[in-house]
Image (cartoon, rainbow, N blue to C red; front, side):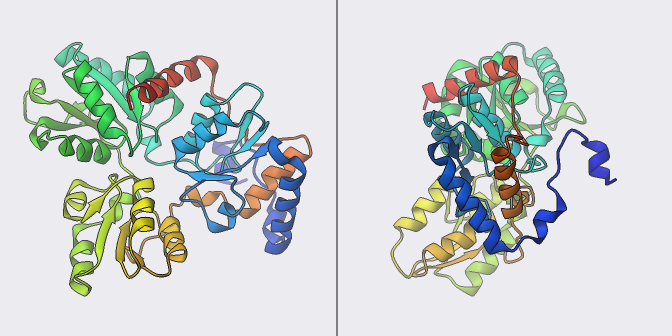
Length: 368
């Protein structure tokens, strides 16, 4: 028995036999199931998914966009979400009771989302409110667990995306003197800085040391940043930007705001996944780009825009390992489990958590 089986016995794993099925046969079987189920089956595919999976997606987008699109499609009884765990949770929160959200491989998690758990967050809240009183509003990136979204919802806060973080932070700072931003410190720092808040009014909360990493009086801190990050976007550096510019001064560097602050400042442009896609789509032929985001998307952009030069800012970058867990064999297995009437990988958020998490999501929708 594998270590994974011992630690996670509740997960049903795909039979090994699926690995030996020829690719063309897997594709044929997926298309056949999609054809038979029609509108009763919806496959949302995140931008970072493999091409072998994204070819079957009925809708593509970022995590929140996909969840909202799924919520509008009430005909779909089965929603096979090609993304990671927190995305499937959000989809379940926003869809109706008769709809089942399925993750083809439940091991497809997110290291960033896992950097903030509910026990740590509740303890941080207790300690911080002891220091600064009722002056904090919590916000969480949608790249977080349902429990963290629910915590934020219970305390009057909202979720944010990389596209609307600026508007939500502006709203939050009209409600309270300071915010606690979970779980990605970089998106929080970069957005607050863009709003004109100086870095010396921000501090990182270390959930293991259980303290603010600052010598300043906590009363001087307006933005409390959870010590979390994206393991993919942290691998982009200013040295890579310098080298790209040295090799070709005409190349434009565009990065995601999950990158570190120094990288975002050094880049020519920065924005959400959708922003990056749109900027490249609108650019004229002959434009050169070095893109600081997940490799599957960079490769897809290069293939979609052969009239432009598009490369990864980090030439040694690998695709997101957890996103890559959703592959063609897992997609086929998931669909055939549904077809047998034995769906595997159903994501169901408990009702009390879903209710509070939905409040945080709806609060975001109200203010952007």
